[in-house]
Image (tube, rainbow, N blue to C red; front, side, top):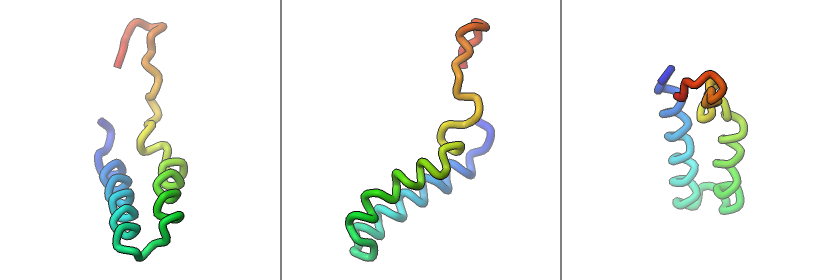
Length: 61
């Protein structure tokens, strides 16, 4: 794993959105759509650069 810190920040932000939506601070529509927006904006964090399994070279991850 290259770096654990960006993944932890993304997970904490998703949990924060869920808690704020549950507490009533965020409207329900925003609380439902914001995690998907965060995942699309920071797709590099959860997809990484080396997402290919390299089956052609015979070396799987």
